[in-house]
Image (cartoon, each protein chain N blue to C red):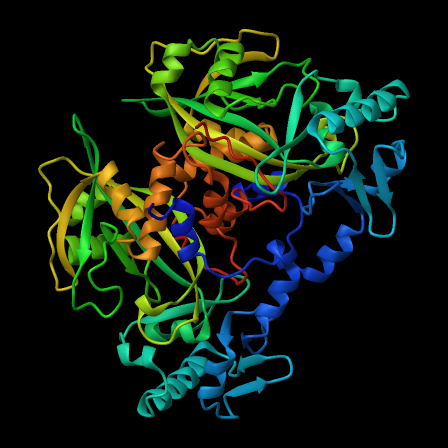
Length: 319
Length: 319
């Protein structure tokens, strides 16, 4: 008996909901400080109390309030805030305070305010320490012909720092500061799957997004129980049978063209990286593979993978 | 300047969220009693205090607790509960206590418990008085050819009790007790759009669901501010140009084949019934018409139209 679709969703959307059990939720929240930027009301992330205790917080840049369990970043411009964060992280790296920072990526992730304004950016590997919302793109490349619908599924490299050897979505990647979803897709499709730009621009269709609040476990590497709210813009890429995705860097081992049944089996076996399982489940829902009549947890699945996050989120509209 | 997609979503998903403002939410909840069935923990619906005050509640079938603001239906079997509800509604109709009951439908809507078990059923027109979750199907029939994507849009009859003359989804209908989603679609497609069963079975694809908590306004007819949480299973029906939906009863005035631009304009003008606007927005998201780059409220829209309801919901799985 393998994992159900709801099991897979629950492995990804792991943070409790207030509506399910208000008392338990309030008790759970005592494990966290909330991350704030001075001058803005909303909570921007949830930080584990142990994480807060392990950082040094220079008083000129930070206010930590242990009673209300808040960590507030001072500074009145993004530049001031970015400098303060960078210095704080730099000190933590030098003293090797966090395992997750050993996986330094040299990629900057943005944080947005209540009106979608850019507040600051921080190194990607630090984002789960602050519990901020991160953004990415996930695409499912597929072939639909007389053999039915088949999906292009890559296996992550054995040497990849996070989720080594697990199955992945055809194309996936995080969006750094300033990057737009479709352009991120085009870039990643070449980098990870050797898909030419013109093929992606013609064949990829935006199909919504999934959002959920992940809580890191061992497979993510580094400290566990860190909160990681995520928004993944999803795309479908319909390919003709003569176009074959191929690894283009060391991150992907190989691509296989799996039938729906093979994909379902790999999902039930827990072979997919957790958030990639969620993207496939969303694909299955949109394409009539999971239906109200064959999936007992249909509604619970759909609402959990479109979670309304507790934090301000970005608009990626181009004007 | 017409209505934005988020405006349209907010006209449908009108009930406040705890996470947006816990204090305001708690204050808001004082307007309601919660509806319970004896022996089951979860709240099954929100009833306006004025509605509770206007009913007679025979003590042998009901317990009303004004302190905790609960209305609890007694009885240990569905049959007992159904009889109690039917008697209570019958008395209310005879005394003409509620405008919404003047629109008696002779259709039964089911209520489910925490493990998806059938608890009771009640007359459809009474469901907003109890604030219970209702279920339905909404389908978008479309043609995709050299002229692009066009949608079959019906106009509701001028004499329809609810939302007269407004635009609607190609096929839509509520699911009575015991009805399954796809079979409901097949039935309604014939009744409302004269679409033959074989055409629907071959061309309709399940594409997920939308869920939201509506609060009734004038256009719904009868008492306003009644809470109406809804789950609508959504379907796409791709039709060839030679198949034309036609009215088959007095509920629909006419069908028009609208371009995406024409549909968007009618949406912005507020011409669609509120939950039909939501289903079209979901269609636009799934078909890459609304994208992260062209819709500033992309994430907010997607999460609100897949609201995780505060009540137990049904599984419609067939075993």
